[in-house]
Length: 148
Image (cartoon, rainbow, N blue to C red; front, side, top):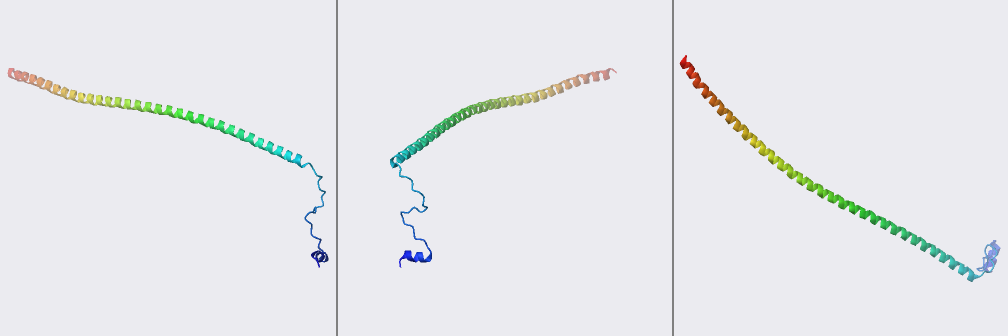
């Protein structure tokens, strides 16, 4: 017995042949294969042009973004240089003011020393004046006691 006979006895359908249309759909009418191939080539070319256009647009946007970033970097560098110059100038002014403050402090110390010397001299002069006055007053007291 052949395999087909055994399958038929068991209730199975016969296997499909490789050239059969499994779903029993009507086969499409033969077409112009060359025209379809040319149409596919045109579709592929259009798709490729579309991809190229998107790539060019992306490249243009990337270049514009790069130019904008360079402008931002240049502006930041200019501001940094300006800030650096301002900082240098401020440091120089601070140094000048510190030197002026040191000179003022030195003059204040010298003035304080002069004031101390002046107070000491004044104290000596006052002391000398007191002694003279006391000496001048003592002989007059002696004379008045002698006259009395």
